[in-house]
Length: 308
Image 1 (cartoon, rainbow, N blue to C red):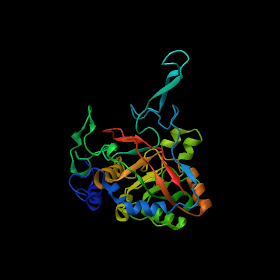
Image 2 (tube, one colour):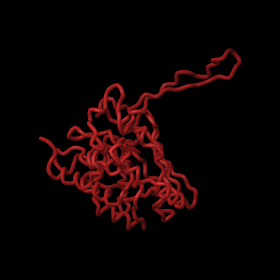
Image 3 (tube, rainbow, N blue to C red):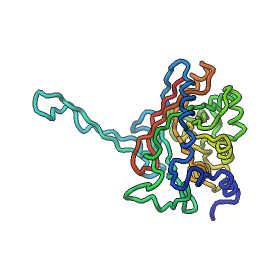
Image 4 (cartoon, rainbow, N blue to C red):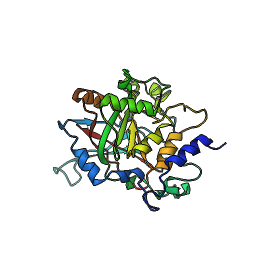
């Protein structure tokens, strides 16, 4: 069946292959320069710190739809054990089994492929069972600290939560810019709030997962034009689900990750941040969102912090 001409037309307009050289593995993270980070630090006004990660727990956001993407299964394998002999300091240790994209996470540029290719024109076959991603694994995406911008699309429309069939458009993003009195600039990490995570917080993870508002196939061009470094939102699927174009599954993933080389984040909890930005009347901040550096992984848990 293949991907439709509309997809390929957009792909040509936003393609970043070779932009930072044939050996590049981090894509739009190259836009986070030292100057961008210095300017981001100047966004701090109060020192207020807002955590954006969901708790990692067995009853997490995953419903079992994707085999192997299990919520965090925590095991306490050592409890107050005096490993150096009786009367010595006792130790407790734990282990966790989980899908790396199960909770609040970054998708690596290798998370999806299309037409046999991943970012920068490399073959999708470079991802193997033994080594994972030979190129552009999440371990290559280091030092993710930049200016964060909250585009509170739901609040801009006077809503607590967007309806499940709402595809977030470039016009919505610009409306949220105006609402927040902020303008997205090169090197920013954009956080798009739909309010959808309220469904999970209310205890209904099935309603959280489907149907879900999310980014439209038209948004990659907007992010490309603004030279955005990365984008994250508060939904399970990132893009609208079910898709806005029938039978075209995960086109935004393919455009962002493969064509543009732009990291995506999902399951970010933006509710407290939305309240804080409204209270401070300030929708930009310093954002630290360092990935766990699993070598060759196609995604990773992340515990982001916004500093207002």
